[in-house]
Image (cartoon, rainbow, N blue to C red; front, top):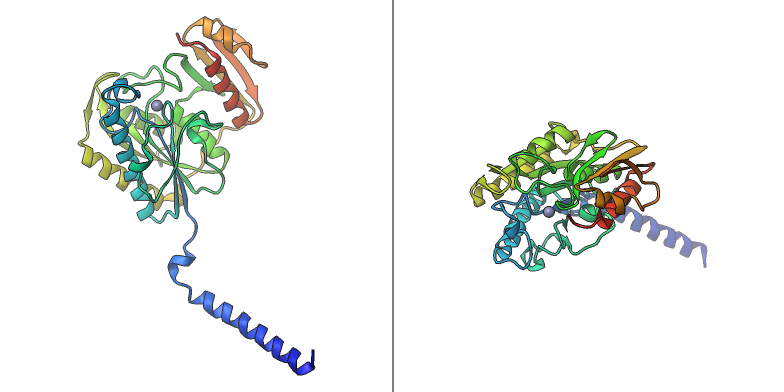
Length: 308
Ligand SMILES: [Zn+2]
């Protein structure tokens, strides 16, 4: 190549480089929007309108309504997240078979994770790339008075789960999975009881949206459906607006798990898992250096136990 050609080529390259710099400076704002990924885990017992397991169990006459309400609550959260600047919203169906949300009913701008089993169960799909986690339709821990369909993971198997000495509801067990990846839980929706437990565990900065107030396990005073969804959407926008203050919920290892079953026959089965220590007739304990590993062992111990 002649010298003059080399100079021309260099000039061309420099011009192109300058063009790239100039071009990137005038990129429209939408293309420079920072990534803000939001993860939503959606359970069913705390969904607006739900007061009975007939509304949360497939094969019953009332289930069609329940799953529709579930999609509408989660769509309100999706809409709030997108209006607050979310660039990606992932929704993990987290109840029972985990095939409750009809994909056709979900806001088409969100991505759905459907079906089970999943390694991280209600938190499948979460990871360090997410900025925030939202729990929609959650419920209080087993043994809570005046709470709709209170339970912890399995109504028929689990009486209580304790980690490092504290009894923890599903919202806490799952918040610790998000926290493991550095992601804060910024909003919890459900009845007034789960909202209270969310504040106790995650601190008062977490936004809670109560969509019903229970009179017992199977009856509640409902927030009107449209209003409940407006509250969820507004709550998500508020929570994302103060995201900078949110802190991930972490359970520091070593983690000592205790699983109290309803009956001793269930503990007989769980005790077969290596590392399990029987601390009384119906309670097993085990230690884990890694929270996720401990969570998986816990789930295996629950799955192994026969229903009451
Ligand atoms: Zn559920």
